[in-house]
Image (cartoon, rainbow over all chains, first blue to last red; front, side, top):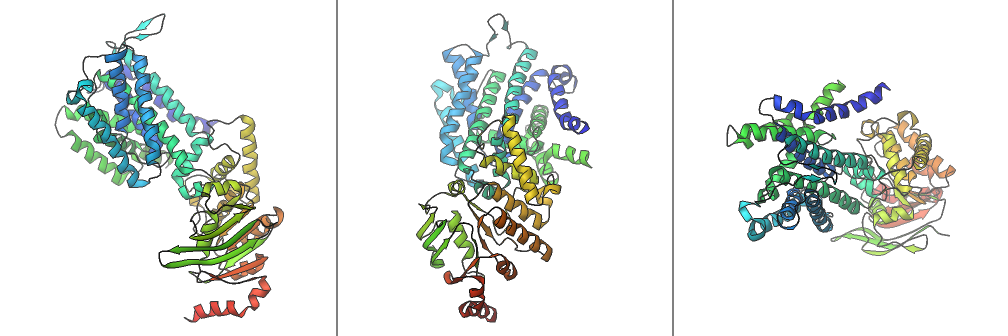
Length: 318
Length: 250
């Protein structure tokens, strides 16, 4: 019983903190509720990446492509098709997932740095499309003149545009469902085959697991959730530009996951919180905020290769 | 009925001929040892049977079916399981988790996002059975990467066994082990062979193990088959002695 409690304690703490963000985040220096929404969105993206990186052992450096497709999907839908937040998210997520599913078979046979390089290359293709196709996407200026629409629950409408708290809980609800699905998958027989691939690909193959197919499925799930995060990111800003698709954005997701601890389920959430907070706080003081994040990252990787959560866990175990 | 028939297989790496027109037939229930000096091509020969490598020429027939071009995972589905010279396990998982993955995959749940409680119960029971059989029950919840070499090897063998193989390939099961561990693993293999009527082909350097276990022995030297026969015949063979002594003298 005591062991069960200690096993669930981290989850309880995380959910309590997330549920009360609008109460405590504005109280800390430089904190405000919209920053909480951004952290949750980036955490979703980074946890989606970590489904692949931390639990399948495959490093993608091109997740911004699917993140960006989700972002443009929702923006273009609301701007040109229908003024519906829900439909926009659906179309954005489908676009990113579909792109991942189609590109997947071309890359899942590659391993290690080759896989990472080719994911970057595909990512850059989408970046240049968004950049060049300016009469639809707005090109370098970004897609303007659209905003997130009120949520329509038939009986009642919820304004998520002007009410930061309402928008935060909207994002958190989607985050909770997504993270719940990922956690559930990782505890299933299918999830265990992914961990098997991470642990030892050769052994996994000679247990009769068709490796490439399982990596493809993991990749598509990961792309799906990262494009959902991208859609929320665009809604967050009421704006999307090609930088959401740029390869450095992919790098940010990797940094968040590694910073927080890619072997811990909540690691990327911690990483995203630190990253987004530093980005917001330090970038208001200096242009070179990335050097500070970079320095912090290098220190963590050098001295705490299991990330911030890895340190806390080791303390708890000692 | 022959279970495995290897016909004239060769494997070339550039100009190097690692395996040169080797043939072998294995009957159900047999325990066959493959021996030979270092660099004789034993592991390459194994890799051809398990599909880790594809042969340059020749055929591999398993249960009357030509599997020469079948992918490794599919050969596992057909009933060929193997272990490796350097133990291949999931080091950061427990023994129980290692076995559980093997059992789930074998039971056809590799793509399942959930398990019914009945299925879960069956899987747990099978894992417990394998833990007991492998003498690993008291170490079930330890991380495999933190265990002794012998226990890791036992875990790997039990994972292969979890696949319910019809043919088990063991690549140097006692490599790098002390006397006690060698003895334990030998006993385990003997038990599996006897009790499960399992067909086993193993590569081994330790002659005590080979002569203790094998029904028949095949000797490879420089990629070619040098001799084949019962342990007695092999022990008496001058060609075999020359190959080993010649190597030692060189």
